[in-house]
Image (tube, rainbow, N blue to C red; front, side, top):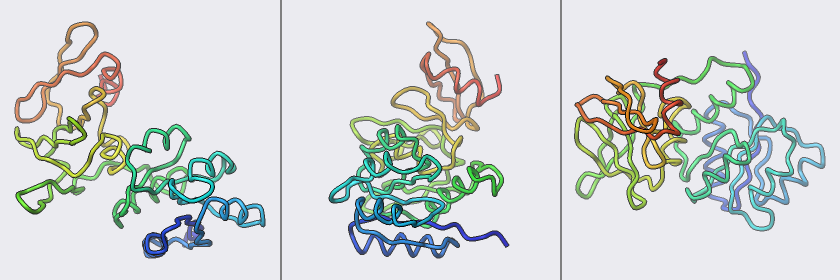
Length: 239
């Protein structure tokens, strides 16, 4: 049996700290430290504490999660946990392994751990799952949609819309980085700065003007992919 991953959790809110530690424990990890701020993390490591990964809240008193990450050994993977989606880009600029939005779900924690295990070479590469679902607004409530039915996501005025079967549905996300980190790597590809495309939904491709790409997705809609994003989507489609 593989040895349990040793993880440390740093979060200044006791309820969120205990909740994340519980999710990690239920996922088979060994939580070796539950700390309330960034300074405590650095002191714990200086005292000889060892972990296989650090789950850091970004907005903590004293040293922030971003500041702490800059001081950690490069060999210690960091997964940020925060309520602020605007930190997503900065988080990935620090070479963070993953980024979880509060409240993190058990499924999302499992994806983060799969990425961690893949990096450590202890599991098969994470692949998109046809059973992944996400919520969209429906009147005063929510309904869940299978990712496999989705063609693309578009953000407009801090609202992310999911396109499904020729219709669009309002999600709870406010930015595309939030969408990207909610699914396994490679599930979605940038079409341009305001659009994500699910490659498996693409049924046709033709050249556009000025290096752009025109792709037809399931349902017949044609999307324009920017010149900068075209090479990435072509590579993902194998063309």
